[in-house]
Image 1 (cartoon, rainbow, N blue to C red):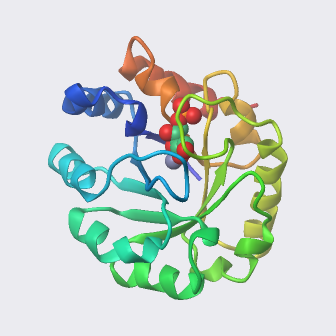
Image 2: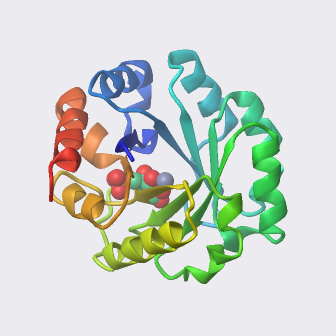
Length: 221
Ligand code: DX5
Ligand code: ZN
């Protein structure tokens, strides 16, 4: 699967959102990643549907929404209407996970589940056919700018093996501490979609930062 870079707007300078997003897209970013946090599921608060609407006015690219909130199903309709294309949530944040994955698809979005560093693969095994995306957290969610947890690499390999064994076409996305120094390793482990916040928007030149990530994850490890 062709690699996709999904810059996280959590690390963008929001006073220059359009300029920052356009620079990331010019560098070859395919998606924009939006981190929704509720101050309960994770110890931080960010943004919701207004951010998705703002991005939709800036770009036609797929908007990849990562919900770190309790009861994410409450937001499926709103976020679909706001223009979200991918809707991923944590299985610990709700019950009836399968029903909610189906509801996400019914609203025309792609459905994803997110695995925290301590969450076992068993949490997704029963619903593989309902998934368009599996997101492996390589930090504990809540903040940008944390360091990649080395244990994530083996987990990515195991998720890759699970998806392959089930012949699932789901994308395998990695989120947290992805940088130019480790993206080749993450790609080699079997990931195909890379969230990057600090490595993109913390760089002096956003456009070059994205194209460099693309170059590194396309090079043979
Ligand atoms: C962490 C978020 C990430 C974060 C990534 O809770 O889910 O998407 O923005 O930021 P970096 O790339 O700086 O780790
Ligand atoms: Zn995220």
